[in-house]
Image: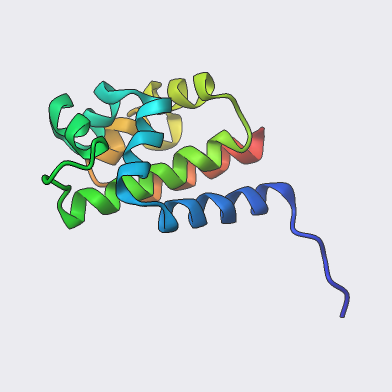
Length: 129
C-alpha cells in the first residue's frame, strides 16, 4: 500500500482543528478578534464587546463552556478559511449572505447554533477556492 500525500486543503483542515483545540482560550479570542473584530465576535457569541475584551485580557471572567466551545469552533472555521484566503475575504465571508445557509450570514448562523452547517459552508467555499 502506497502512502498518498495529504492534499493541501486536508492539511489546512487538520491544522485548523489542531489550533482550535490546543490554543489557550485567551489566544483563541485574540486570534478571532484580529481577523473578525470585537463587534462581529460579540454577535457570534451573543455577548457585549466589553465581555469579549475581558476574555482577551484573560481577566477573572471567562466564557461559559458553551461559549468556549463556540469560540473554538469559530476559530477552526476561521483558520480553515485563512488557509485559502486573506483575512479581509474571511471577514467578508463571515458577514455576507451565504446561499448554503439560506442566505443567513455565517456569523448569524453561528449565533443560532448552526455550527456544523457553517463548517460545511466553509469547506465548500475552501474547496471552490
